[in-house]
Structure formats: C-alpha cells, structure tokens
Image 1 (cartoon, helix red, strand yellow):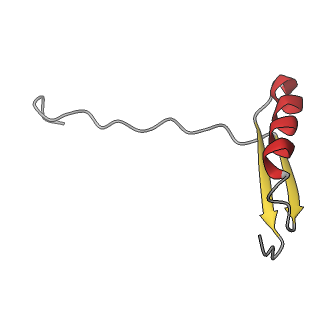
Image 2 (image 1 turned 90 degrees about the vertical axis):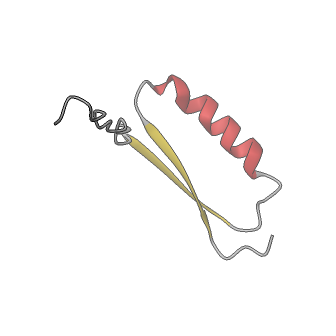
Length: 61
C-alpha cells in the first residue's frame, strides 16, 4: 500500500448467534412489540449472542 493511500477498514463481524429463536406469526401485528420486548428482556441476561426471527406465515395484517 502506498503511504498516501487510506488504509482499508473492514467492518467488524457480528458474532454468530449461540441461540436462534424462531417464531412463526400469523395476524399478530398488535402483539409483536410486546412479544419481542418480553423475549429480549428474558434473553439479554443470557450472556451469549442470540437472534429473534419472526417469520410471517401469510398474515393479512
């Protein structure tokens, strides 16, 4: 690399989740905010990376 060229920066890679929570949802728009908030609250002290995946099962809402 030439001294006047900027160094390339590689964005940090997020750790792979240790736990994946997959929830199929169907017409649950009114409940998703409370569901995800409560689930996140329960998992945040887990101490390991996790992900929450909400899979739309053909909802109309």
